[in-house]
Image (cartoon, rainbow, N blue to C red; front, side, top):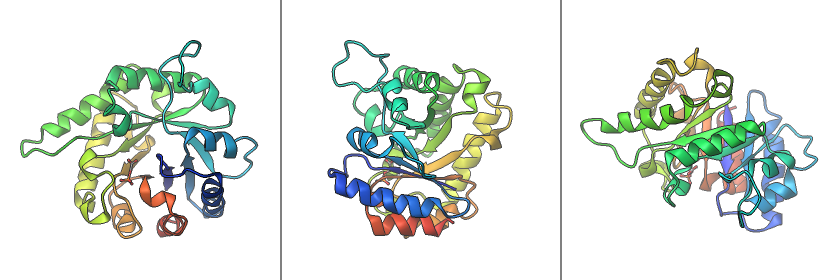
Length: 246
Ligand code: PGA
């Protein structure tokens, strides 16, 4: 199981960042658990350099520019240079600020060009009774995967994060049954000519995963792990989240 902790802007002191990293190192020693931390950029720069633990690091986002005159942007090259190995791309909170599929694709390509594995976030705004949201999900996957080489496609981790379930409580998250259905659907889309073996692609779920619902979401749904926001920034909850699936 992969637990990717998306700290968003919840972590705002080096002390908190270090406490979470210490917890992550303990969890990463557990069998079958891969821990990925996605801190705000300053703490990525604080924690990732010289990291010899089994914890991996991700950027929460990367620039779609290749560098140069781009004030405020952090490029894939800069992220890779501090020792991160993943980059979240296409998070709904970035898409809500105007990030298009074309931008998400170029971020994924820049990440791959610098040896970072993209964690590609996809997810519908809402569900409709005619299941149009499935087409939306298919399009979000296809637009990125179809533009990559086969070798690149195999590097991509897909994080299914329905927008209606993000930043709430476990009571409002997806049900295990609906998640199982979506994981099957995502693998079907991937298997329709995008990757040779759809099982080879890691599919994560994100959206109000908390200690109270994680185990039931993991059991039988077919997910390979979780992308966790708010609950991953509380040391106690984070430890519970890691233990529950290992
Ligand atoms: P949440 O966020 O766990 O706080 O709902 C998940 C995400 O947006 O990655």
